Each structure stands twice: as C-alpha cells, then as structure tokens.
Length: 113
Length: 113
Image (cartoon, helix red, strand yellow):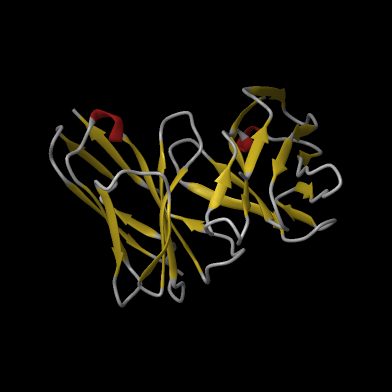
C-alpha cells in the first residue's frame, strides 16, 4: 500500500543553519504531496504542497520539490529561526486510495538561538 | 475568516463511557475528515465525509462512528471507551474530496482514565 517515510528526529540546529528533512514515498498513480507543521500545543497547519512531478511548493522560506524519479519530497529552508521549532509531517493524498491522507511519523525540529 | 473549529478542546472520560466530538468546517468546505493522533505519532485516518455521506473509513473498530449534517458540520462518536482511545482527535476540512489541501482544527484532547 501507499506509504510515507520521513527521516527520524529529533533534529537540532542552531539559528540560521540550513535545514533538510527527507521524505520519500511509495504510491501508485500520481499523488499530491504535502508538508504540514505542528507547533507545540497547536493543531496541524498546511505548510506547502505540490500536485505533480517537478512542482515546487514554497511558503515562509520553506521549499520542497516533487521528484517522481526519486519518489521524494524533501523539505528545505536556507536559514532556520527559533520560531521554526515544531514537528513537521510529510503526507500524500492519492485519490485512488480511499481518498485519505497518508502521513509520515513526523520529524521534530528544535532550533537553538 | 474562521478556521476549522472543534469542541470541546479537552475532555476527560472513564473506560466504558461514550463521547461525542464536534467539528465545524471552514465556510464553503464540504468535506470533513477525522484523524486520531497518539502522542509522538502521525495522524491516523478515521473517516471522511463529503456531502453528508461517508466516503472513506480507516482501520478503526465499529465503536467509532461519525456523521455530517446539512450545514457540513460533523460529529465523531466513540462508544465503550478504552484507555487506548486517549489521543488528540483532529478534524480537517477541504473544499472537495480529491487532492485538496486539508485545513485542520486545533483538535480535541481526549483522556481516558
């Protein structure tokens, strides 16, 4: 079945460091891919999305490119801030698979000043 | 504009009781999905409703049920509560069924004693 695999956390970085959180997927068809963020004590927020191969989603300085050849959707940010400390979830939506989001386990990010 | 609203925010129940959780989607959104998020894990899909009909069901026992009302709000019901039902229950709404970004509420934290 469809699945999403994220790099394990926690990830700890210093402010202004470069961030990469790896996400790979297994799916039939052509899923849409998403990154969600969950700040401490809050619900999930959509960070960015891509709906087809080679699309680049971007928001708040974060970027991710839908790579069908490597089945990846890695999240990157050039310079992280303390306020980026949160848990990041990669997810896919494959309309052919019961129309539900398939989630990774989440990667916790802590940014130190 | 109001986002997805869930009530109550916190709830404490004992084993064997039942619970009803409520969700109001973003205005204009016709699809509501429910997820269970156990601490430290990604969300697990429970149900999706679209246009008041069940369109998807995850791997949860029959103790879990839901419905969607004509105004597109939704209720999640859980009967015969077990300790393992303790979790954050998330509601998400989207415009349609397929490949649409989901917008999440802050969730209901359910604790079973």
